[in-house]
Image (cartoon, rainbow over all chains, first blue to last red; front, top):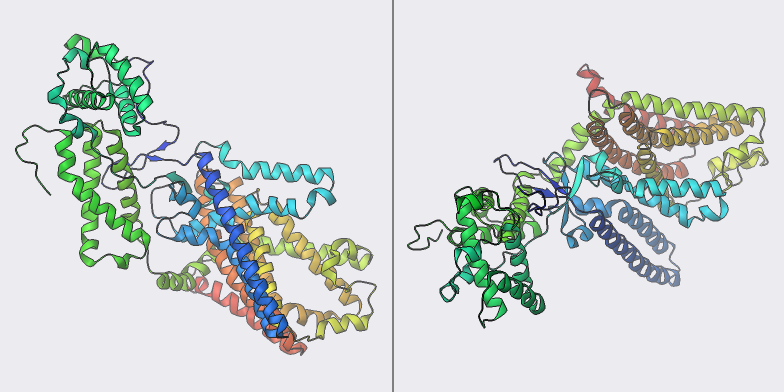
Length: 300
Length: 335
């Protein structure tokens, strides 16, 4: 194997093994730090937005109660506010993650979900443990900021506060599994498992075009799996400029002269290449990329 | 399954064409199930789902070895992952879980924390004792221990009569709001004490000592004026529940902290995970206890001004909690 060959498997630093009882590795992918941060920002903004709406609503209700000079009315409003704030702050994340999709709205947008690290069932205890920890990861630094800890406290307090926030807020950046403090306590991690659509069968589509193209074996032998899958991506993205560039590169490489449309040519070439490489696979011969010339040359 | 006619050679296209329908059906079922409750699936669906899941898994294994269509493999991986978590994420109903929590899980979790509970109690008592002695020796200490907002005029400069009055005033307007405020505020403090435990238990321990110190300073002030017995009733009617809850929250925090420092035979991560689960169960219970304490403090204390009645309620609550938590363990001969 040529060491220079680009790796086919997705970045192994984010891939984790989860073998199902049926013995198949699901190859989970962890959510990246960026996705995690994005999801949290969305959740946090949603939380604040809900609180503001809630506040406006209750303010209205409070005004109504004050006009009617009803003390009971005012206390009901106050109770709803106190309880509502408490529940939102502590149970927004818990309520969503206990649900079937094990993900808050922000995580859903980024296609992530919370999963028990041992691959077992995600229990309610775990969800509660991981989210109560947000108290010191997020809410403490925020309270610290807003209570004017920096104004009234000494410079030392500010330094300690910033250090605290740095340690806990950025904890996921310091370990390879992107674990929050809450994840450590709960035995969970967050994986990226978006809902995917089943995309069109490019090879099936292309094989209908093959009768018009007769690629020789040498013309197909120039590329390996890596190039094939790059070509697949180019075809699925369907960007005219990229298609043109890629088509011309391949045409030059295999010495092909035709007046066909770029997409049709690439699609046909893709189908032919898939057929050839998959046939090799069935016989146990894989070719990772165009640099991988190990057995191919000796055998033909 | 639909067979594609006259195919003699295996190809990834026929492979896909033969199974595509099943995958789509599984996907559609999952979409319905994840969107709402399991009831959206018919009995037939529920029987078929595991079968479809296993066939999708086998498709994934085959696809990884035979096809180079990356989009197809990614799709199958995503589909199988979703189905796996649905099929193996079996949950009991909320009602049964709640029942199990109160009859079994919660008391059991508290019993396993008995060592930390004693530690937490000792820290609080130490804080109380220290503050008591300090304030007794020099009343100036009172103001440095108790934050301005909390004392509400109850400080060494107040007259004995005024202090007595604070114990028995029953301002009955807004009791419900007061109770709610106490509940949410105390719960937040308890959650905080729990979460701080992760920082090697030190902040939790400090918090427990400090809570004890506030208590001790108040007690010293009132005892000095000969109001010790009366303060006891005022404090304990809700305090026997509230302080118990705070001590348990502290114990949960201490558990996490000590397990992170001393994981014993387990790996540090596993030890932290196990401690976290026990502590989380305790914490849910603590919030329930604080709800009771909030009601007792908000209503009970304001409406009941008889010292002995206050003491009676206090001891009833305390022994009630103890019996509930520890009796099943003692009966079964375990701690």
